[in-house]
Image (cartoon, rainbow, N blue to C red; front, side):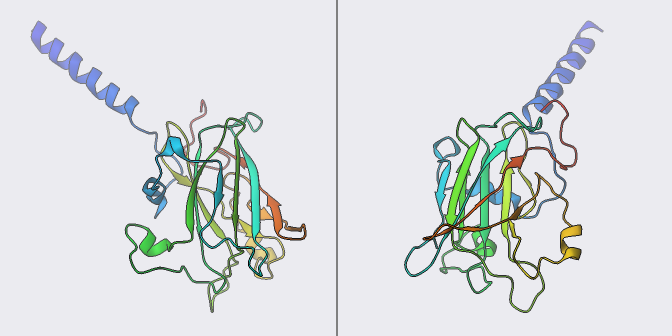
Length: 211
């Protein structure tokens, strides 16, 4: 009998350790969020600054976006948070080179990874994307978040306040996951700049209260 209870206790302990060792599932279904795991650079080697593949000052004005990622309390900077972004080109397509693997077959090559620094800061430079041809979706930049101890999840896309497709109706449908993603661009001469702070857990389903 003692052996029976010992085996049962060990099984329960093993199950508990397995559960504790797994990421808590938050954010709901997220098609393509696992693309954040395809980073060609190890997560701990990622920089907080990213220059996207299409970024150029060659006759064009690139777009620089920066911000701070905050923990769920809304005031403590969150370091070591992974961010994955991808978007269309200036024609509204996800361009490909022909040798794509994994999610690059869908997302194209205009994509990249960042990791917030000790101050929770991130910054990337790219060219402003266009909306999908023949559709009414506002132009946008997709973003996926992966924070320590949790699975990857999506937050509201980066959108552009001056986009005529970002109608009142479209704005009302936004979930504000991670806070508002609407950007107000500022022309600083050789480029456009915008700021977006991200709030971990904000409007994210099943987000743990003690995170």
